[in-house]
Length: 403
Image (cartoon, rainbow, N blue to C red):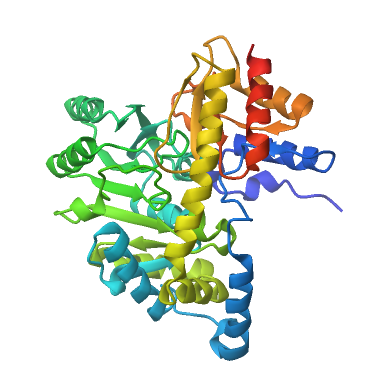
């Protein structure tokens, strides 16, 4: 028998598919974890011991015993009662008077990001992102053949002055950006939170130049300091912000429950595109999240997570100050990450690989989060997962490698 040449059957879209370098590092971490205890600063997960798993077990038991629909399809856009609870949630936490009929429940924020790419982006479209930005959004939208332009950040978030200059330059060349993607609160990978002045300017720029904004709100509910911020959607008078929500970072990434809050004109189109690919989000997860919201558990879970992650963040920042004095790094007021800029001649990939092999400390190199092949000397450190008593030890090991 002749084995087929599979390449001739593949779509031309494979030319846009890139393997995730982060996944390669995660595979190495998983392999190493079978040999020894890992101090992990790598994951973007909440701490499993902070998640109330026993509560979920009790809720799930009730659901499977009492709810016949727990094992059948729900509507493509999600259970009606969950969408109603999400609308109330958006009013309480985002100051957005949301219409439940404009909410589409997704399999985490990741599916929401992909649906936006599938329905809004064409090959050759220009998309503006923060630089650095969330690596999975970069990789996902590259599969749709777009051109990504990264805008530098400072301690106040995306440099909206540079954004405005970039848009004007593009227009002078007869080119037009289609949308701006931002994680304004607790940004991944930097942990930076965009200031209110920048948020207002961003909204003004989008309105003036007729652009859509995709607001990724994954970290909106893990805020550790008293900061004056509002969601972009709550400031959106033109209805040009597409809101991507997620419960993953507070309630657990494994539940895979996120949502899109869309302009009403786009809802039916997104539902029609989504249905054939997933039929519906996982019904048991929808029902668990619904009970957590309706029965008032979310705020208790959130406050407990904030307390513990703030302690971990402070331990990490103090350890960096002690063992890596003079190293530039972010001081996040929200989210799960601290971002390090090592000396320019130091390779973040090499540090990450040696830290794993020699010291069983897992980190993520920062370079894959950049759109312009820069950031080779950067590292992303997660502070939510590692046990508190091991964080300083892990930072000391990293410091010894850097030195």
